[in-house]
Image (cartoon, rainbow, N blue to C red):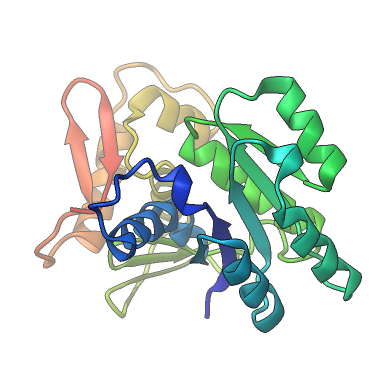
Length: 243
């Protein structure tokens, strides 16, 4: 079962006019937020007002709060966070804002936050910050997470791979290559970068070792499945992405 984080963003932050149903906006926001963290085994519980935040903190067991707010230092939600912590809960908080810079970061830390990021978010940086923060606060051991892309699931600590319920047998280097593609899902991985990160040293530029291992992975990961996950980017490298 995935762990849960609370993603707080007040309705007035949405920028939508009153003709748009709150339920529609909230669902779109939940999906967008969820895509950032679902591949490391975290579920999103969206909160759009302080009353709902209070209920989720009192009734659930979230491992983290992400607050997408503007005036971070004056956010009334800090009272709810402090109350939860006073009850013995170890609850880290990351604040996301727009163009606040160093002054906003200082306000967040002084108010009781643990990390601060400006928009737009870089997805991989955000995921790394979340993993590291959960590790530091004892919520999760570093590396003890699950990568999920469509029906593909990777468990790095066990070096275990499943696609749509079917366990895959990979060699150590095949797993390393798949893991690198998965941690950079949606982004083009250049052949030179793959050689450096996966094999750890420089090959001659005319080597085809990456292409050979990609063929091996495709035969195991994509063969027989309607939706292919590993895609070639001509003249550059490869990308792993869901359809």
